[in-house]
Image (tube, rainbow, N blue to C red; front, side):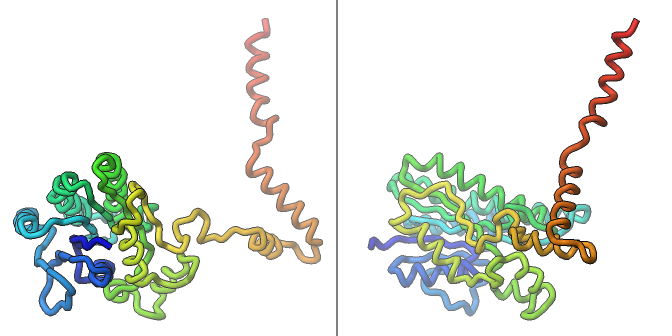
Length: 297
């Protein structure tokens, strides 16, 4: 396997910190970018940079470009800052978009031309299942959805240069930041687990494995894709789980005392029909009366 050099943003926490040692074990060189690097046990090069600072980011990226030939990028750095509609602070909105959206463009643009010249490159954007929408996630959902748009657009622009662009959209990942607001056994944790079909959180190593594949030689023909690693949590209807057995149980709970099962089923079906289909006589009777008056002498 050819040794490559990969750049990982947000490299000292969560998914970024899981991706870096994985790539290192595979024989690749890893260049990490993080805001705080003191006391971090990192396998390769680690550069301190606040990606929210446009000028500092440009300075650090220029220095890294002079020293390394970057073959692939993992855009992991980002923030969420949950706020409900009606209480969205526009400074927060700007910060979320700046770190999730602008920073990914700035980092990728710095190295993409060299990738095109070498006719090899891998770009992996870390999104979220929030791209499908979530409560109190207006800004975060919009920012991560923008990364999906980036991914597909870059895939089309770069395919002719043998540079791929893909994304991973994980569900809730068990990190220190997650546990800070959702302790083990808390009601907040229970609410999150209720939205996950497997009823467990993802581990950073599981997400890192998917990222490692998208960076590999084996993924050379895969581009423009968003890999949903969420145990099916983004599938429609997963929360209600409306299978035949559950629908029958709901009907049984609504059954009147001593009402036979078949009679209950027929009653529910009649109710459903009246909800779905309006009565034609009521819809058209007014039209017919109007026409008759117009045609009358």
